[in-house]
Image (cartoon, rainbow, N blue to C red; front, side):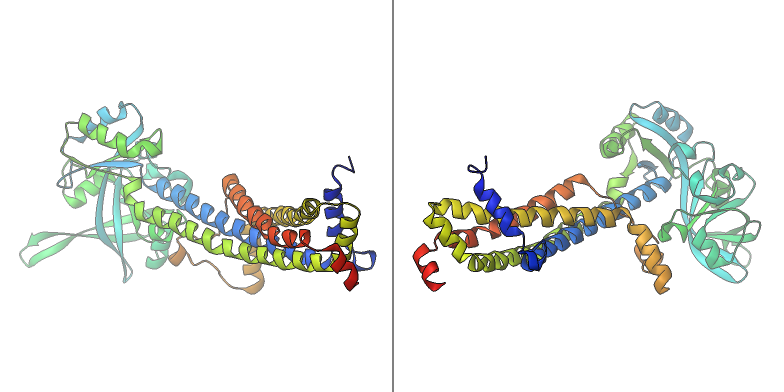
Length: 416
């Protein structure tokens, strides 16, 4: 076996250093470290992008439905009949009516623009998981005629409002009075605080009961539309259109893929760009493998000459150094995967530790929509990174190994 695989044995021996220089040679260690660093950085960055996308999708869909069916003029009159049809439609897991309108809240001299969300507390849990995000209060508190409101956490902080306080809600629709047109307004009691973890929602959303929204907006028994939750969220674009046709048509349909299409597409494009750019780090490390192997070939010229005089073929010499370069790639890539996965899995704890130590907030929720740095390691990304890094490392060994195979034994021994 040793005679058959002596090229691999010699390549492994060359990877080791002489006794007075330690177990692994300095130049080989530098090459391995470069590969490991490039692979680890790429894994961490792509894992952060994956986690960022997953958390945003989860948080967005926890507050909004998979799809909506609304009236072409912004209202549906006979919605109870349509709601019953949709609740029995194949592929639809839940349906709930809603009212949506822009407005303003005023509290103790402070004001803020809001998005008024009129919901039915009994059917809303079928399409949106708001309960786990409530810091205080319950959806059941939003009874018709109670005139109570649940505010987003940042919205409440902006207004300085707490549970039990009275706030004034104003909508753009006006009432004609003898002194002119006055904006319609109504006092609401703060019944709870909502925290989704995304600044854009926590800063704007104000939840009220469906009946209170209808009275404030003078919509009668009409609603803006019906929210839907699908059994398979990825079937939402096709399913919501079939459902609207089943109701007779004449509706405006929308789904989560079109509402946030540009946002999620930009994340995917950014991920691909980062993969290409950070792959250049691995390419630089691969160039380091080339220089390492060239130095090894120069250092082992006498050994090469001796092997050639003992009958080793140029192909065997080529195999010896390809084995050595491949081993550098395998060890470097394996170390990079271990480091990258370890950092990605514990990234939030590391970030929190650095923030506490430095007293700096790395992520501002007003800019990044979240205050934590999530990470999600996908096996396909790890395999793709490993494949690219290992291929570059193997390609980098070809020229030095070919150069070693072409060395003339006589010239090498004569120089020594």
